[in-house]
Length: 418
Image (tube, rainbow, N blue to C red; front, side, top):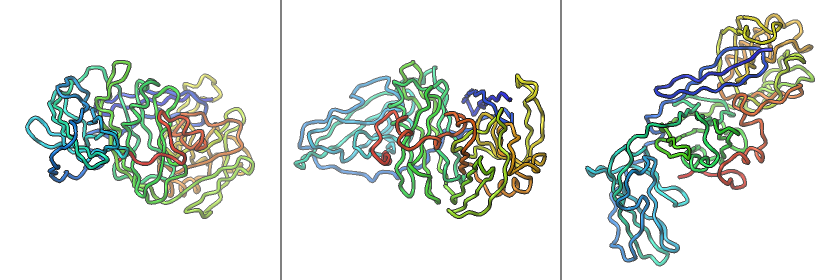
């Protein structure tokens, strides 16, 4: 049985190394790829000039405080509001008078710059609030951000601009080292997801804090646009590290395409937009190397590749084999792929090392139909899918999934932050 390792790739200064040793049929050391962190997912429209009425109430106390120094570049603009008061306008300007774009959180708790602030720079914030009786209060604060820190975490986002994904594509963020539990709520507040059409959702952290997944209670609606900003640049952590960069992406969700595999029948039923389009015989993992039961997601596709398990501790499981139409569904090495050597038993007997074997013709057909993010559910095997062995956001029920959030989640899921 094979031992499989997933190694992170460098993206700019990003270095992630995450390994997972599990049994499966294919061994190919996976290099993670992440989007860059330079372009905002959405550019907020420049605010129209606002001339507020002369303040009639007491001055507001702002955060960051007037005269504050060494503030993180992730700082948001907040204010201590009068009873029943609401922020009516926020203006943030640089030392040379340029206005900074940003948006007010939906709950009114703070105003979030659309890009990280600059290191070692001076800013002036002006906030106007309206009280319940109609009176207004205003406050002004000039503060300076910190120098760029030396100790940073690495972060990643498995989502790319202008790509179309399957309906089960979770938003996947990754951190190295992992985020300490005491910091996860603050970090989660800086991970923004918007959907069009609007759909509620929630985040779920894996135990060691190296990954967090975002999903809705059900699969995304076909045609949904996902707009994501993982705004971690400069966020301070309790271990003395800081977030390294903002990462953003805007992507689309395509048609509904789903694969369901039943070990009892050894068949895969394929659905498109809710209708059965094909039923395929399969061969799953034999008892010594079973396939994982659970809902997985297609993570990558390779028309041809090589499975190399020569480092497996069991000599019986060492081999080098060329594979066609391979679709990865776990980090541990489980794939859907063409297996011409097992076509004579597909639909009747399990002989693989954990993969979903199909005929070459059926593998080609599937490969041409699927997208990264399409779900595959396998049931009835001798092993359950391990958390974190792939994009396992859908391996939990919604009620179990939301327990992994660092913030409270309203029934049915949270709405957008803005």
